[in-house]
Image 1 (tube, rainbow, N blue to C red):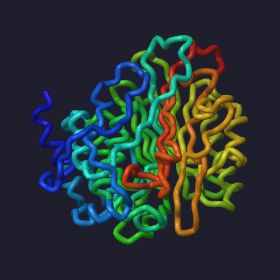
Image 2 (image 1 turned 180 degrees about the vertical axis):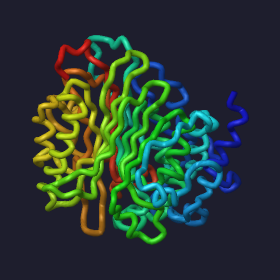
Image 3 (image 1 turned 60 degrees about the vertical axis):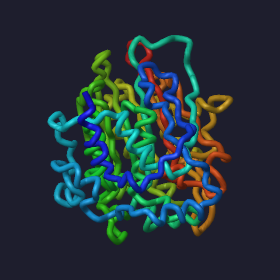
Amino acid sequence: MYQSRRRLCSALLHRDAAGLRRRPGPGPGPGPGPRGQRSPWAAAPRPAPPRLPAAASGAATLCARTACSMGNGTSRLYSALAKTLNSSAASQHPQYLESPDPEHLEPIDPKELLEECRAVLQSRPPRFQRDFVDLKTDCPSSHPLIRVMQWNILAQALGEGKDNFAQCPVEALRWEERKCLILEEILAYQPDILCLQEVDHYFDTFQPLLSRLGYRGTFFPKPLSPCLDVEHNNGPDGCALFFLQNRFKLVHSTNIRLTAMALKTNQVAIIQTLECKESGRQFCIAVTHLKARSGWEQFRSAQGCDLLRNLQNITQGAKIPLIVCGDFNAEPTEDVYKHFASSSLNLSSAYKLLSPDGQSEPPYTSWKIRTSGEYRHTLDYIWYSKHSLSVRSALDLLTEEQIGASRLPSFNYPSDHLSLVCDFSFNKEPDGLS
């Protein structure tokens, strides 16, 4: 069925195959996890070259290769997508409504797209190995699990132009290959729902590709995105939410510009109510990205309270189960975290379940070295309605040894934030609580 699609995948990534040196030998790759009905292709590792002895060696290798600039407006990837919106669409369509129905678009075989990504990445070190941890096996679910992925993917304009990563070679940030690392991570874990922050290549990369994989996407940019301050930017960054159309039906969607102290802020959220086609059960999924930087704790707290008020209304006072994904830019000691943990929505943080006592957040979800110093923080969370939903498994985090002395991002990993992935199941039919 998909043989004719092979050329399409190659055109989408548009990489000079002659410039890629194929080397034998398997490399570590992610397993599909405990969730049922996962295709075996996701676990297959890409062929891996010997590990680079140092970042400088990798930089020298990659410097000789041509890569698209981050903001040429009509990248080679986009050029092959013909009828999709170009990168200037952001300024032409300020409402950023949901993507058009992609049924008329030619589908892509995810296995072949993954192979194309891995071909582009052959000269890089192998992917990090991460395993799923089983968290609840006492009562099997009668319906397929819902896999949710949360990830701040690092805006390309910020990575190259503002974030000042002191130990990350510039070549590791080139979009031509970094986009393939991002896509490889998504394709490997096969989320049913994908919540992203710092997306500044929605219209020319993620929407065209993911829609052909069966996802429906929504993008909501920051009104005053810092990406716009970077020369040759690709438009504003923002939040994006994707879900598989063969599993869910969209019931309601709203984009929110968060307020703080009665003022509209530069941070946003997308909130959608979905209905599972297998079970008919409804739930709410939200993605957000709160204000960054030290000294803005009260501002983040106010933004979180505004988001909670909106969620309270949309879930009809916690009657609809809820999952909230986000880069909160806040450690668990901050007020905004405490507001979510003590909210009347009965939310719990999924990744606490990985700790020995089930009550502690991971030691970090972001680890980077900037010119101003080294930063190791827990900032990213997946909150869920603990009375209506159960976490069946969660993707373990990278170890310090895996991350390496240069921290993130790197030739191995495309972002300064780790992706979080959880498998959820509905509890028994709700009795009025969520």
